[in-house]
Image: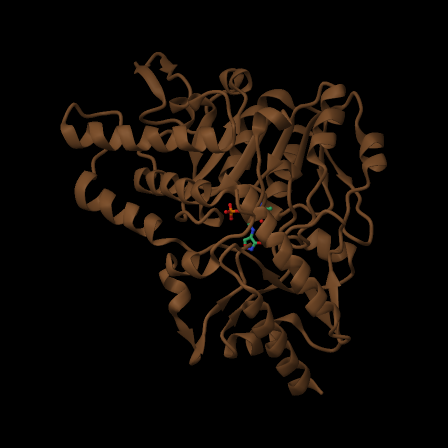
Length: 408
Ligand code: 7TS
């Protein structure tokens, strides 16, 4: 296996990368927000609506059978991609946010009561904070937060202290969207399990960028979004261990999630249908399957190695700019370069970079408690994908020089 990717060839697969913005070639460095789509994913959507469109699991007619086969085929691809044991452990949802809310409203409501505790970290996305706060408010439970150090690394000894008989769930980000920190999830899971506590991993940022195998990790739940994995918006995945999903009540009621309905009693369907009420995002799931095929073809190990090399190049380049401070300097880190500049609001950095064709995100990145931890309102964030190049970083650096010029 070669360790490098043929990035010039890969870039040809992404039509949007050929665009110009403000007359400059687009340099897309906002991959943590959403990633671009290869032609194969776009074609999959078009092909579905052109040749197959029908509802799933319902019709005896040919198109419905084909749509069902393709939809279930996508489930099998996702199962294999994350190393789950069974297809029925893969629930299609709208995205990471819906996946976490599903677990909070079903597993959480059933298993968490007054005085119980849920552990998260200081670097969670709001999607992995607010659903638990809502549950805690309803149940009289408590959210406990594992602190981090100045590099943005989780303090494992503090985590150990928080684990106890009241802990009912650990819900933790695998890779921070704002800092790039990769958390030591194998250890986090082992420690929780030694207390008999299940673990949900927020894989929104990790699944697209590093190998994630749920059986090797032993996590109890994993959630991620299709749109960050080079797939469409509006589709995502909740993985759960079968025995946990079996024991959970349904999330939403409606069609598809039932075996039989009378006005006296409804019998719920088996997994995974129990959690997929209503007509699902059929086209989205099938196109997510195409995205998984694309990433698998490139090789997630090679993607990780390439992006790591690019991160190191970018880190060196940004470190040379004295007016700039990188936020998030963990030893274990993936392709995120968050930074602040003295006397310049991140929003202004983002605006000037845009005029140079460079797309980054600025703001709190839906991690306000993390911003508070670093005592900053916001950062400018460049986030990498496998179609980015050293030239992209060079353009970023030049555009930052332009920011310095404007503000000097
Ligand atoms: N968890 C993490 C770690 C994330 O990075 C995001 C999105 C979510 C959850 C929510 O995912 P969604 O697909 O349900 O919206 N993060 C970002 C970001 O960093 N910039 O825009 C969205």
